[in-house]
Length: 217
Image (tube, rainbow, N blue to C red):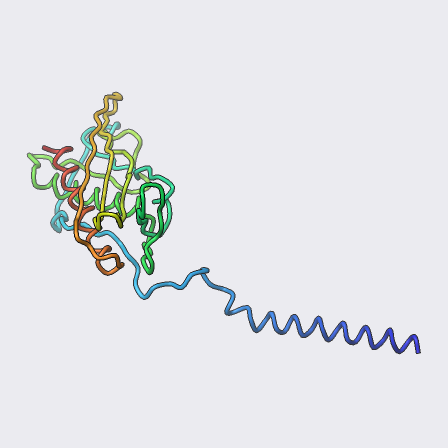
């Protein structure tokens, strides 16, 4: 009797293990997810001004004299994510529902800066158009560097404004540096992704245009 009980106990245990394994296998496809419901569309930033097709640029010498290197801006923790921050009070931050960036904001903003500078360089060029570099393999010995901190790229629920604020640093190969703060706002923006996304894109382009004029007056 004792042997039968042990056998039955073993069979029950095997059946329980098999059942749990089968249940886990069936549940697995539903568990493989991002943890949040992905919206139907993702947000991005796109330049409003671009260099014309066929435009060329150059930089000379081993030190890339004449080249402008656009570096990825630093960001505070609230922008180092794929969500759109919302200032709900002086001390509280939330994230906008159904709004997810296709890529982190710092990289998106860097590309807008780079393309806007490229277009500005083409407009103001003399005999030689400055070479603008904004990729991850940007050389470390360019003639001019644009770096800085993207302080704000989000929505202020208290005022109904979208805000883009960028603290820029322009430096040269000798270590000389100049700083300037740029900011653009759009007021009266509804608190939803369909309104805030385009407004942020417009504000980011305004800042990029102001930076380009500062870099290449």
